[in-house]
Length: 105
Image (tube, rainbow, N blue to C red; front, side, top):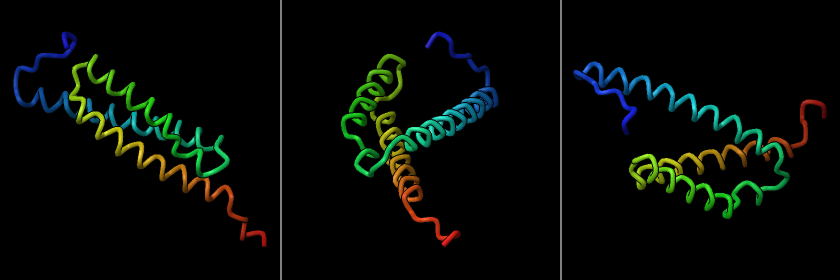
């Protein structure tokens, strides 16, 4: 990666890592917002875990990992964990949408 800053000491390396960690967490949060938006368009539990879509995402992520020089196994594991978590969030959101409002009953 030719655009990566060449650190001169340990503290600079740690500072760069901290900056990246903030960016990564911010992007995970942003991805979660879009997952919630996507969930609002789904009407049944079967739509939450669409194997075809998951396969598309994993193929794209594997390709990107290769293009960008990331460890493909690590990247795939991170994405599988993230997708599992977001799928569970979608299921819970879907259940809440279909529960009767007990406050007005």
